[in-house]
Structures are given as structure tokens and as C-alpha cells.
Amino acid sequence: MRYYVVTVFEELVRDFCAQALLGKAQESGRVTVETVSPREFATDRHRSIDDTPYGGGSGMVMMPGPVVEAMERAEARELERGGERPWRVLLTPQGEPFRQSHARELAGRGALTLVCGRYEGVDERARRRVDQELSLGDFVLMGGEIAALAVIEATARLAPGVLGNPESIEDESHARGLLEYPQYTRPAEFRGEGVPEILLSGNHAKIAAWRRRQAFERTLQRRPDLLEGRELSDEERAWRDERES
Image (cartoon, rainbow, N blue to C red; front, side, top):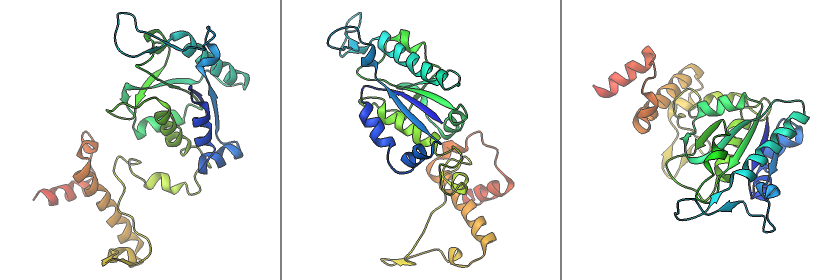
């Protein structure tokens, strides 16, 4: 996976991505993260990338030129590597909520340009030149960098070889449209609370069945919206009916 992050805070992005598994993935060549600052394409001596909005209003708006030229610079770098134009994603509160399905789709694209909005937003003429708009949720951040980093983490971990245990990708929350089942580790008793006996039984078939049911019931209780439109298995329908009876 190759990422090109359009941001005015290049060091923030680079420092984050140099840590932990992302850092190791870059060292191994499985992941590449590069930054492009729109300030490189500013045309005044102050390197301005924002201006007051036409029609009035509070705050400042990112100008189209620096943003579009930064995306084009990312494209040029990818073409030099023999790739195709990176998929352009704008991180904005107006985008559709980022989900695991988006992560899987984006992970298959090979190269992404992640545009981090700032100030009151991005000039509409620049927005028309992106392929997709994504949001972390119904709230507003000071900029798109945290959202871009979330997209990088969510997609890079799906790249082959990035995670030490690839099975964890299939077992985690949202991988199968469900929240993850409860997890326990040592000690066997903590402040009067023990571990479910089934997990100590050594019966892997029963443990797997327990985990499936726990994942389903936890989703039903905490995020029933994830089950809307989902075709339930016979096993899941039986669990649902048992809870409702």
C-alpha cells in the first residue's frame, strides 16, 4: 500500500506512521507513507493556502490551487513508480461515515491520496476533483489529519504481512459485520471476577460456538444497526428469538 497525505502538518503524519506496526511495515517495504504540503504550491510570499469565503461568513477556506496541485504532485510520484493515479479521498465531516467495508475496498486500490481538510473547509472546485469523501463520524475535528491516520491504520493492517497474526483480521470487530466477542487473559481471577469456564475447558468447538454467540448478542445489544439488512444464519435467528422470548 502506498499513501500520499496532503497536509500542512507533514511531521505529525510522518512521526505517527514511523511508530509500531506501521513503522515496521514501512521498513519492510509493505507500506509507503509520503506527505505533500499544499504550501509548496502557494503563490504569495506568506505561503498562504486559505482565504476568506466569497459571500461572507466566519473562518477561512482552503484555496483550490494548492490543494489540487498537491494531489497532482502525489499522482506524479505514483506514476514515476509505474503505478496508476492514486484514489483521491478527502477527509471531511460532510463525507460518508468510514466503515470496515470502506477499509477493505480502499486496501485493494494499491495507492491512496488522502487530503486533510483544514479551517472551514476546502473550496468546492477542489472537492470536485476527489473521488470520495469520508468522515470518522458526526463530529468536527480541527483538521483531517487524525481521520487520514485512521484510514491508513485501518487499511494498512489489511495488507499482506503487516499483521503478525493474519487470523486476527477475521476475528475482530466488524470483520464479519459483528462486534468482537469478549476477550480474557491472565490472571484467571481479577478482583473477584473470574474467566468464563468455557474458555478454560480446552473444548475448542464449544469455545468457538460460545464466541459466535457472544459476538452476535453483543452486537444485538450495543449496535443493532449493524444487523439491519443482514441475513441471519439459522443459529443467529435462534439466539435472537431466545432473547426476545
